[in-house]
Image (tube, rainbow, N blue to C red; front, side):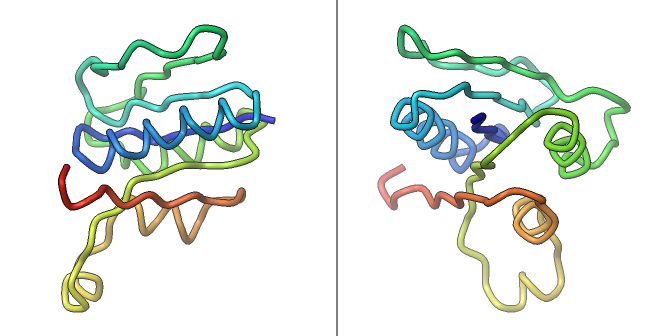
Length: 120
């Protein structure tokens, strides 16, 4: 089994990474971290014994991040995707798409959606 997490440079991305680490530890499985930022991922110290692979987004800078994650899911043997979500108004949902929304709708594997706590 492999857990994959999509990590943008945001509070939601940090919450998703924390949840994915906990999930991988709970299931004693590999973690694949997809860095959606176009800069280096400020990754935390991962727990000892956890198998972690960090992938930087490849392709043109204007490549859709959701496509990058979906391509990695199809390329690797991923069993679960972890993403961070933020609260959006109904108008925001209707007018603007989001990476998280695309991943929720188009992922071929189950998705664990994490919303950061109000304190973060």
